[in-house]
Structures are given as structure tokens and as C-alpha cells.
Image: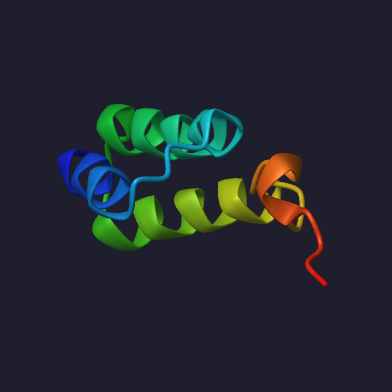
Length: 64
């Protein structure tokens, strides 16, 4: 989570829409109890339930 915050600061992009999805991943990661493989599977399943593009529509404005 701190690494994600550092990257947001480094690139100057804080996407609150995408933050919703990353917070779900962090929350699952913190609360999950079990093997590493089971944790990876649970996170993978969660990510597959997300929409194809989790970036805010504001950042998807088409250029020229």
C-alpha cells in the first residue's frame, strides 16, 4: 500500500476512481488468512471481477 502511494506521488496521478479498486485489493490482502497460493487465487478472482478498465473516464479522453 505504501509502495502504491509512492508511485502515485512519483507520477503525480491520484485516480480516486481507481483507488476504489486498489483499496479492495489491499483490504482483502490484509484480512486474508491462509496459504500464499490461496491468497493469490483470491486476489486474482477479485481482480477478474473488476471492469476491464479501472482507470477514471477523465484519464481516457482521446487525443488527436
